Length: 438
Image (cartoon, rainbow, N blue to C red; front, side, top):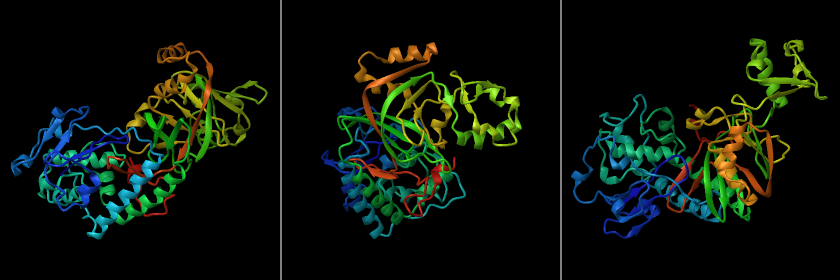
């Protein structure tokens, strides 16, 4: 059976098919003595039978391939199953059983470092890499163990990277190597820890809700038990953590002002003003007394904490730290979801950069979904308001629950097992923070 892990950074789906055409499962593929028999793999975006690539037959079908446009590299990873669900809990339990089975068979080999592994390379470190990828089904066992890094190995690395929240570039460098070498028993314990978390959160969360998974740096919009949209995010770094919370989204702000939190004034603004007295002016940040009187930054003693006693506000515009949209759910932590002018952060392995708030990629899509019950809003209207620069708050006619959660491991019904770094060290395990060191 060929294990067809489909890969991209978001949560996913996969199909495994027996050589004779009968359906199989990922779980059985790792526990069956027949695992590793050649089968078929689906191409991204195709669900018809014509989309199946047949690798069965002779060993020659698994010979070295180095074509970078190979169909083996075309895969998607897009599950509509919410992370917080009873089904996810059941899937995690199955994953625990599978990983315990791997542990009982001696676990997996360690992949040596010291060499970047990529397609076209022949190196002694590739053989243990192949063994490691075969152990978790990312690479079909029929690919064999050799020193050649062909496109089948590259596709398997991409799948592995996708399951671990890494940018799927198909190369084995420091972060991927560290994730490959996490011991299987650590993964078992990580799954057990998160089974408890998911079970505790898999009750009635509402017909429509938003879930922020902090370790995954990901946002889900869920409706009627299915994910309506999924968004890459940037969350709080270790010393300024995003909190766990359960609130309701009440309104959306277009082209907002940013009122700088006191913690950021003290930790960031004051040191920057000591280095560059023009910093506030360059970033369109103004200083006010709490009576609303604007004051000159030059009158503030930046060698003290005097600025903390004032209100600092950044004007709307291209430089605004909130971007063009803020999603509001009043809470004691003063956090919210928002747009960002720093879009390049979404393409990084480690997306733990904020001071606690959550930056959302494709935030207008999320806002469009939030405003659907209002009936008088559309994506075109959202885009028009953003372009206009108009300062506008829009109340949701139907407030939407939002949950900030901490899930570092989960599994889908199709057998994909996901792991993410324990960025805030809450798992109590020796899980490395490999993915946080971009």
